[in-house]
Image (cartoon, rainbow, N blue to C red; front, side):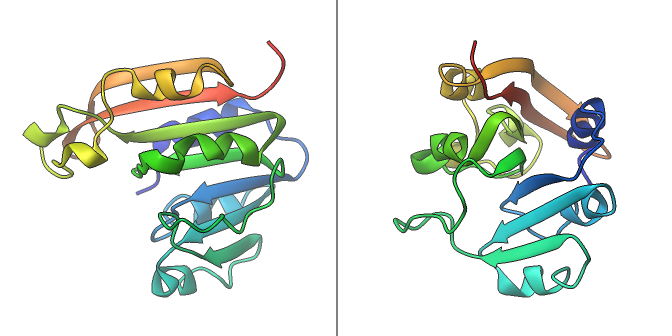
Length: 171
């Protein structure tokens, strides 16, 4: 099931022209497949080629197989994306590099698990759980925060997440 929050954020942009969107750590394509049916050109990046193969033939989806957690530079164009989405993925050592991929006036929509989630299921490892207000603390120096939520979500099962939207620009 796709992220309703991500889709609401994208709908709020009222997209009229084709845009370039990066689905960062795209996994099974639950977000990029439905997004590709809108006026959106999607770049889906993930380390699992088998998962990427499931949707690489969809119109408007370009796939990139790459392990985002290596020391190698990401094979993505800087300042190219109008929108970057990240859902249920966290790798702290390179997280702020997402900013360099956004165009001026671009948007970052980030949703992932937060501390407290260990009471409801996986992930339980603190390495994969955001700390209190971590998305705001990580991106607010360089991006303008537009919205932020931290707490329980009940989407078929309970989880604890942070959801934040940001805009790149002069402020």
